[in-house]
Image 1 (cartoon, rainbow, N blue to C red):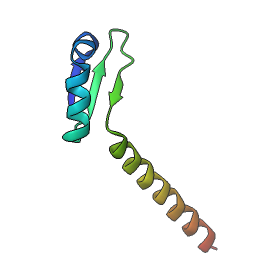
Image 2 (image 1 turned 90 degrees about the horizontal axis):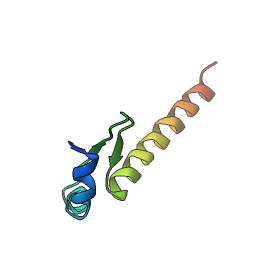
Image 3 (image 1 turned 30 degrees about the vertical axis):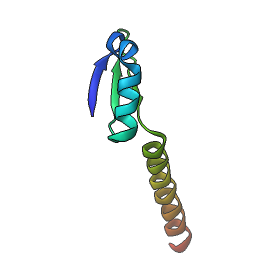
Image 4 (image 1 turned 60 degrees about the horizontal axis):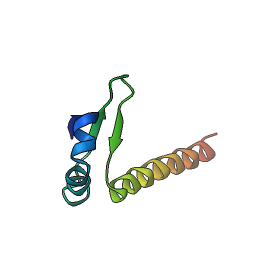
Length: 67
């Protein structure tokens, strides 16, 4: 994970986007207002979403099985 100021992000977008995709890097974009953002590849995002879904599903199954 790397953090970059928003000005640098705008100047280096193509390079950072490529790094997020090819190196599976997560990039924190630091904004002046403190409302930071994250750039990651779609594959990385989908993997996180899948894990969250599976954990939620498992929790639901456990709640059904408990008396």
